[in-house]
Amino acid sequence: MATSRNCTEVLIGGKVFTLSGFESEDYLQKVSTYLNHKIADCASIDGYNRQTAETRNTLLALNIADDYFKAKRQGAVLENDIQQKDKEMYELKHELISTQIRCENLEQEIERLKEESQQLQMQIVKLETEMKSQVK
Image (tube, rainbow, N blue to C red; front, side, top):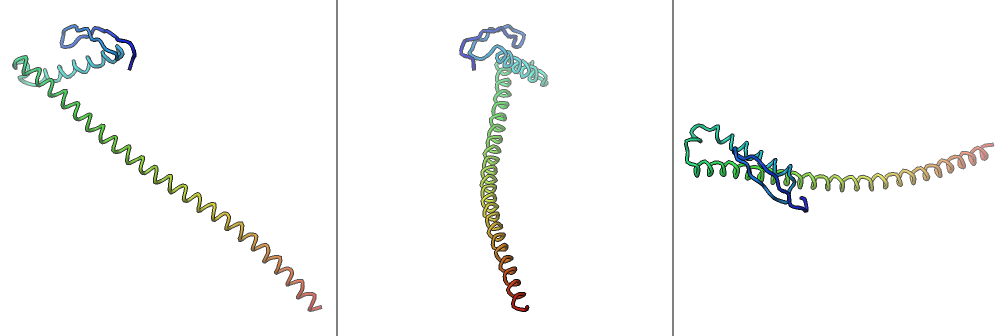
């Protein structure tokens, strides 16, 4: 959001309006474009233009409110998806850390077993040597 107030002229429903706000001029134009599309969508409905201005404005407001609540619901769905993904990611990270710890422990066990194997090999060689010397 900008820190200075912006003013821009926009065309809404065939009339020029001056919009003012802290949002960028591009944003204000985008809002007016959205509104023009909603007006055109409503105008394309059979019988819409035969309604009173008050009824047309109410229908337009209902359509905009519908868009708002659908976007809000979609935002909530996406937020829930993000929370679920965050939970899954946390669980995967936890599983990864546990697996890394198990891997490190297994590597230490392998090293210990290698050393033990070397000691046993040396003991075998020693015993074989003793046996050979006793046989002679």
